[in-house]
Amino acid sequence: MRIYIDLHIHTALSPCGDEDMTPNNIVNMAKLKGLDAIAITDHNSCENAKACMELGQKLGLIVIPGMEIQTREDVHALCLFKDIESAIVFQEKVYSSLPPIKNKSDIFGRQIIYDSNDNIIGINERMLLISADMSFDEACCITKELNGAFIPAHIDRNSNSVILNLGFIPENLPIKTLEYYKSEGLMKLKEANLIKPTYNFIKSSDAHYLLDILERESYIDVDEFTISNIIDIL
Image 1 (tube, rainbow, N blue to C red):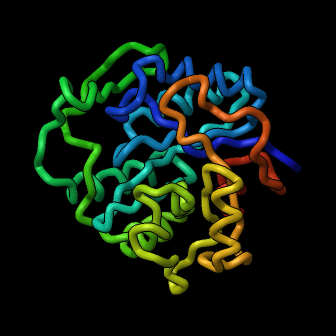
Image 2 (tube, rainbow, N blue to C red):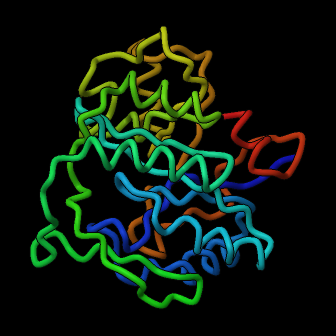
Image 3 (tube, one colour):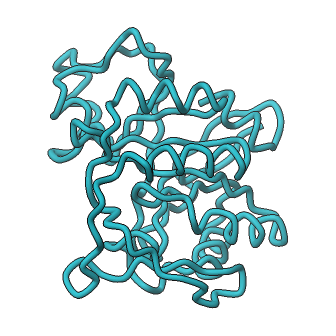
């Protein structure tokens, strides 16, 4: 079964996310664009994933709880989970490794927490746009211990990518899938032999604005239309 996906979407919990990135707006935009599954991946937090999942269930859209972690090496990676409980366990580990710095909302933007009706139920005061004191290897291993998928993010970008910051993808880690932003960037990495062709590759939007959410262009083939099966494939 082929399903169309966008597994890298930020809500207004990410300080760089537009305040129009509410649960209802995101889920409805994904439906309008014909997507079958999305992932909510805010910076170093999962606090808006549950509201989006509840809406997705009502509208027939799979919403995967996740996070875009920024590791000790300033590398971004997607950590996706089979259920909200596992995502929260991971979130607490990340929170405990973040520096005790408050967000400066006047500079970086508010970090808004919503319910499934788009009501603001809180403001996350932690500085989320910062590196956790957790290595790339540690983040991968913890994600896998929680039966999640660990996907290095936007590997073809010139900022916060594993290729740029580490120079390679550690082959000892159980990584099956890499995310890219533009096909020409991925092609350059392949031509330079910086990544092995044995990986799976997915394109994602890294959307911080509603219109940036992907159309029906990135897909995977699954046996079952479930979060669990999607994670197992990734």
